[in-house]
Length: 461
Image (cartoon, rainbow, N blue to C red):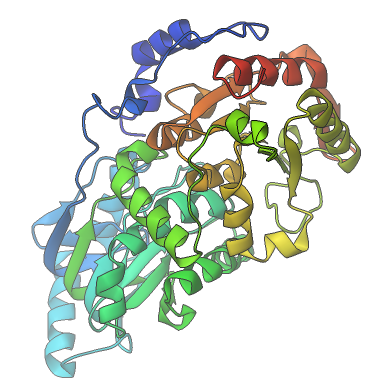
């Protein structure tokens, strides 16, 4: 990560932890507001920009190079990988010899549409081939998977073709990154894309240690983005997958903030507004207890990750997977503890739900309280009414992704001004079922903590 990433601001995170923490039995609010959630006084998130480069090479992960060097963005996960990827791409694929060859080929061929290519020098990152297009739109995207052996992803983006391409990165944890980092950039420029149907969208930057593993990641990413493109009226036929390109013009919008949704506030809110409008969803306007007093049952949604579900790819991460029996116990305990709520299970074993993204948005949009283990499902909090309640279970004892104010889901909660809590079970509370690749933890303490939290924000009595 770039050193300016919120997750790297140690003193700031310590200050948040010291001032926000509450005992799990404390039911009175401590009135702590994450500074980024104080929308009346917080510094405005950055306004999205657009950079234009002429006659440039673009790696399949979105690094842009032309005769004057590398366009080096700094707010993406791979910004410290500048030497490992960007400069390697520049020296192997965009050096003077390659540029001269490219100019000669283009002079002979005129306007091209992906049918012409050149070969990079040995040692180029990911691919040795560069394909020619006319105009390319590079969609900045970030991700946290290990694209190079142990690398954290390279800020993907790349839109190109005839008039323009849109590229991005995919990987094992595609759901979060497509949802929170890729689609918001597409939607922010949707009017342009719809008005220019010849514009292609390049999709790529998933390179694992083996070709087969890379192909699996790409297929998963394509599967995940399909319903979202359909929702905004873009065809899968517009995608070009996993290529380096040379383009006459390259458009570079603001890149991702390396799992910092606050950095991407305007793109996220633009996407949310469009999706809610397309699906005819209207935000609730009243507190859940007020609705309960009217005879309406507020909704509490419990997210479940399973072992051996075809819709969850991190199958070896048993610390985030529950058996059906354990999930049933937790669901029952929540219903007993919160009789004013209707408790609903959102499971990756629900084939109808998992194959209908619009259904997922609707399911979470009705929720007043969203509960889930750290993972991509929590990104759906974007569709809840602002000032709803989000509960994140943090199964990792020492992980920056689970730090209040630094982790991606507390940052996304800040964008939406949600009430947010994170529960860290002590190590001794866990039981590991390695044969079944699932875990269990102390349900009583977890439910107690949720109950205290909801009382402190006047969501329960």
